[in-house]
Image 1 (cartoon, rainbow, N blue to C red):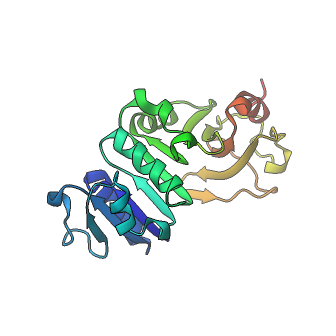
Image 2 (cartoon, rainbow, N blue to C red; image 1 turned 90 degrees about the vertical axis):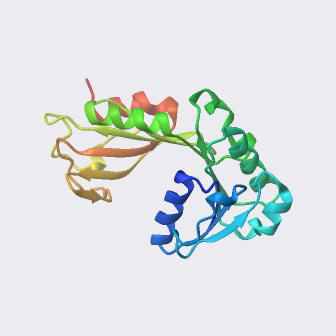
Length: 219
């Protein structure tokens, strides 16, 4: 997979290192020459230029990228990069970083954003996930389909403990995609038995979240 990252700051470089470790092709774009550090990220391609300018994105051959990431510290720049990537270069997947929570409402498909990542929201979700048992915790939002990745941790005395996954009467707008059990990640099958303490990961539409909770943990 070929990925272009707009913004070669600490966040952009960290994303690049992770993707390179998984054998993806990475291009980092930044208008600040001081941030172009080829010796620190071996294997990455680099381009000096403003990613908000179409000419620079043409030089980057953005049309050949599978994913574009807007990772700058400027929300306006991330939005412009996202819109250009989607409308001018037809990039299939666009991911954008949200720096300021007040701007979160802008990061939608109208601006070309498929997935928006808000650091404050992610941190808040991780705090909730660490302390809440039996409640729905939103971990991630998929903007294009308006669905969320949500987590629900089963209490030790959950009524569904010992029952197979197939017995969960889930709403049609929710799908169980993973089970985290201790140090194991389990791909759910219909016959997989549930256990107290399981962290269940669902893709779910917002309107179905309470129905999902009632299905898994009926009162």
